[in-house]
Length: 164
Image (cartoon, rainbow, N blue to C red; front, side, top):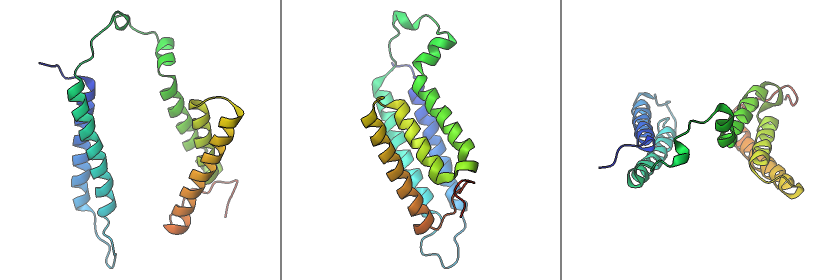
């Protein structure tokens, strides 16, 4: 019999969260005269997230518990842990800077800077990659900003650099 590993626990918690989010959609009020109800989009996202969580649970149950090696026995120092988790910590730090910069840069410039810096942090460090990262950041965030601003009428943070 396999012991439960951390992946199984996380997948079960995600499924419980998805169930709670789905139940919460029953309390959303429908706006009179609306073509599509307010419940549709959250339910689609919750259904998709629940499906991915179910796949995660299925794969975690099949994988079983990893066997410990001799390297796993020694506890890591903070410096070693930071070296192992460099990408995760770096991405969270970049996201924190993005959130703090929204007041000054706004969604458009801040989003472009965040995507560019994240891609540069995770990818190779050469001129061609930097150019490609800049094009991806400008294209992706520019399109997303245009869709939300003009297509959906959502007011995004504008910042102090590019006020309307």
